Image (cartoon, rainbow, N blue to C red; front, side):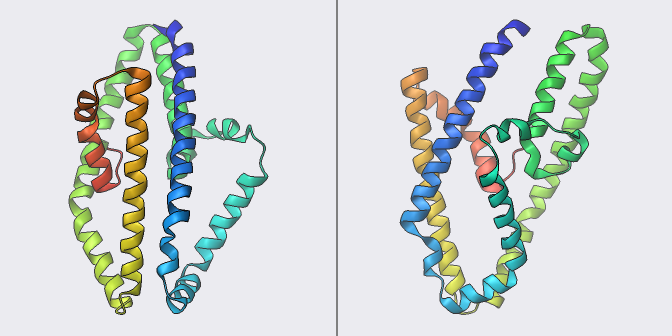
Amino acid sequence: DISKLSSMGGLTITTYLTTTVIAVSIGLLVVNTMKPGESISDETRTELINAYSTDADEKREIAKEKKDSGPLQPLVDLVPSNFLGAASDNKNMLQVIFFSILFGISMILIPSEKAKPVKRFFDSLNDVILKIIDIIMSCAPYGVFALLASLIVEAPNIDLLKSLLLYSITLLVGLFIVIFVYLLFVKIFLRRNLKDFIDGILPAQLVAFSTSSSA
């Protein structure tokens, strides 16, 4: 029912923005409390700064642009000026989602017999893309092993590995706090059974956590 999209869309966007602010706030709180970066020695820190200075400068420039932009800039950034350009850049995932929603609404508004070929095409394309992701994810453990082996060779003093361990613990602490807050939302606002909710999201969450993939 296309008439329900307005209220559903408003509620979805409000919930998304609220949970995003909560998640970011928890992340900042946890990382500034545990401070995993402070466990790195000055020598290792200097090596990392020299190795990744270009990337760091680029990130600082992006952060400065965001800070200087107006409060409504995120809404402007939500609309892609070029969908193909947005689809080829992981940083513009929200633009892809916005276009996909608009595309789906437009498919609903045209006669179903005209929308069917497009739907069949995207259903088939989706299956192919997910299979590609399956293949990549099957190879990922070997790639991670190679990266870790390289890291150990480059940092035999294990200083960096200790910092990465502390970073991983910091990440897990933050994630568990976020999960706890979300479960409170489910219990208080939706009044859903937590076990049913956890059972429902568990397969998707395990894939996302173990592979860093949205498949």
